Image 1 (cartoon, rainbow, N blue to C red):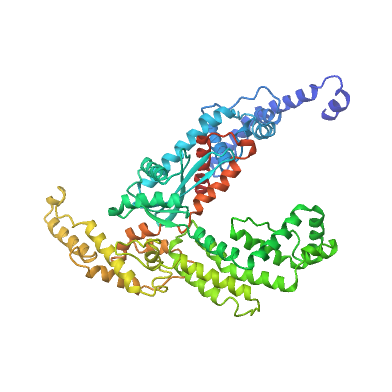
Image 2 (cartoon, rainbow, N blue to C red):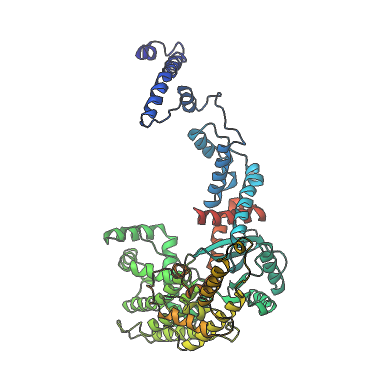
Amino acid sequence: MKHHLQTRHSEQDDNIYQTYLDEEAEKALQNSVVSTSRATVERSEGTPSVAQPSATSRRRRRDNNNTDVVPYPTEGVFMEGFHKKLVGFIAKDMQPIQIVENEGFKGLVHYLDPRVTLPSRTTLANTLIPQEFERAKAALFVELQSVTYVSLTTDCWSSRRMEPFMTVTVHSIVNGQLESRVLVTCPMTGSHTANNLSSKLETIASEWSLTEKVVCVVTDNASNIVAAVNLLTHKYREKGLWNHLPCVAHTLHLAVTDAINNTLVHGTIKQCRDLVTYFHSSHTAVEVLNKHCMYNGGLSGRQLQQDVVTRWNSQYLMLKSMLDLKLPICATIGELQRMDLSFTADQWDLMEGIFEVLSPCEQVSTELSSQRYPSLSKLFPLISLMLEGLTNVFDDNPVRYEGLFIFRNRLMRNIKHRFHNLEHTNPDFRAPKWPFVSLATFTDPRFKGMYHTEVSHVEKQLENLLYGTSHEEGDIPSTLSTSNRRSLWAAHDHRVERINEASSRPSSNSRANAINLIREYKLHPMIARHEDPLQWWKSKSDHCLLKHFLPLIEKIHCIPATSVPSEQVFSHASDLISAKRSRLSGSTVEMLLFLNRYNSLNH
């Protein structure tokens, strides 16, 4: 029958074959009653059964142009979940809002399920995205109310339309885990004076009920933002809140940039930049380079990295890419007869020397930009190790170039100057420029006092803090509940409880127990470098002595070493506010950047 209809009647009636299929499907649907009864018996006997869609539904899904498709209810559970996933897709992958009106996307969704009705761009922007934003914002607000201390990072940037924005990220320790979130990305109106920036920061913190919880604010070294945070530091000085920490990555950038620009290394970097620029502007040169990369096994697909003048680590990556492709570059220059771009053997050796000097700095920047684990405690050890590494950088590979030694020595001098007071701490527990660094290192079980030259100073500081914490905890309640008074043993049980509790906590009248706490901490073996110190402290939450460290740990180790979290929002913003989406409103930008970070961390 099937063959007969296709060969004999296809031109007479296009619907005959489809009618035949429909009749067969209806027969299968009637027979499914028997199958359903049999499946019921099988389930009762323990045999699993998988529900199959009806023939009618299969036919409707197969025909994309069928007008009988019944769409999902707009307010139904399925569409609510779909809308949530759609907003997450747009925010996480930085897709344009207008994608819901693109024919290709609409066709894809219709193919997957024709019952889905896509929302309009207006509905998405004015209703669905704000709803998801408010939901995520409320969840973050509840999370932040459960923590005692937070730290912030902040920076300002401008969109393609030269609209200024301020980004603020928040960092806290929740259940032994370091959490980093985007708090807000909002338009910054008016002049960026210290007073305006200070007022904006305090307003943002107040809106999130964080004013009395901000331990530290990490920023770059711009004078206006530094002055803004210092105003808040002075305002909350009595409470020890709103301290300022310079971004370590930015401070290191200033040290490296000064060493590069004020030595002969600058000329070599410029030569490298000219060569890479040539390859990026000539497709012929790239084709020849790719050919020679194929001849050298393992180099296929490699590319030369163009540097950015304002970022020293991009210069490091440029040097690395050139050294990796040294042989293909030399062969390409020779084949193209561009000897004006060639390097001598001494110049290649000089490049290798520059790369070796910059390698420790790159490692430090990468290590301290972590957002998943405490980073401030690693600052002191890494700076010490970096200086040690720079001192010995040429021991295994002696060089005869005086310019390299001048470059290295200037870099070391810059680093010592900018990070010279990491260990020094004032009596009020705040160093002039680097608050909490010394304490963070000492209370990290990976390092303890290994890198301190004056361990007694940090121990004294820690002793004062622990003694103050014991005062804040107050005395043990001496009253009994109404229910306990009915038992004769209630008074006895309460006395035992008080005695045991008092023996496991520092005395409010003496520093002796605080000293014992520090001694107990020092007796524990150091943990491996790759282990998480927060998890180690979490495991001590039931320890009779070390549990008293936990409030201090949450206060110190929530501080990041860099303002990279805020700067990373910039890169996401550049993807979001592209040339095609330069008209996005400030509120939409804020919601999408918030959801981008929130969804990325929750999935």
